[in-house]
Structure formats: C-alpha cells, structure tokens
Image: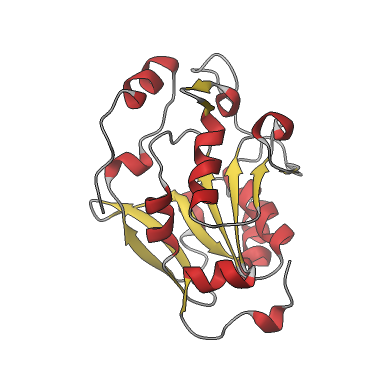
Length: 209
C-alpha cells in the first residue's frame, strides 16, 4: 500500500492516515448466516445491501481502499475481495489476513451486519491512531473488538495466535496495547436475522456523538 517510511512514529490523526494511504477498511463478509437464511452481506437493507451500508460508512468517512474480507460478493458490493485463506477458522483469521494484505499502517475491520454504522462513528474510531496500538470500539465501557482499527504491525502475532487455535476477537485484545473508543450502542447493533434488520432500519436517526 504505502512505503513504511511514510508511517508516522507518533500519535496521528485519522485524517492524516487517510491522506497518506496508511488506513484501509475491511468488511467481514465470510461468516455463516444460518439465522439470516441468506448471506448477510448481500441481504437487502433499504436502498443498499447490508454489506454496502457498512462499506458506505467507511467510504463516507474518507477511507480508501475498502475491501471485503472473505465471501464471494465483491461484484455485488462494489469492492475487491481479500480471499479467506483459512475458511472456518473464525474472524481472527480474517483480520490476520487483512493485516498481512495491508503491510503497513492500520486496517479498520467491521462486520457486514451493522446497518446503523455511520461515517461519524468511523471517524470517531479512527480519530487518533498510535503506532503498534489498536483502537477498539467500546459501549458502556465494554470493549467490542468486532469493530476496531488494528495495526498492521500485529500481523505476525495475530497469525501466530490463529495457528495456536485462537478464533475470537477477544483473543486479539491480548496481543498488544489498545485504546478504547466510546461509541453509541447503535453503532454495534447487529442484524442477525431479517426481523432484527427490519427493526433496526426503522430506527430513528442514530445518536449524535
């Protein structure tokens, strides 16, 4: 993506990372969707597909590139796909692959089923990034590592964790230092089934940060 020498060695604003190309976003699209009945990433969600809502939030925050992590819906979603090299190994493996792909900087990773995620939430999460530290969304002081910005410098240690059988996002929190970023609950409300999706889409405007 970018020459490693361009990565700043002090805390840096998200806007600077976007401008220098050291911040990318990956939307998790490779998980099973048993309770949904179809692949959630391409489920209709208003004028967009569910995965496109998350992609749009990242793009509207200025992040480029945005890619799909796993799945086979790049054409429908309008983004490149980073293939899942460890199918069935869980979300940590997908994040590991995203960090290896990025090489330098940071990757914001988000599930595809967050219909109320907005560009404002994404900007808050990426506002202050520090070398070799993650930024993790928190709701009511509880970390929600399914929505987080991971430094590419964690790629090797995350790959090792996956090789040791770790699967969950929670395990990633043990791999290095991270900063909590408070977000309103709707940013993390996931649509696990069509009924929940419809309820969330009918929700009024998300809380202003």
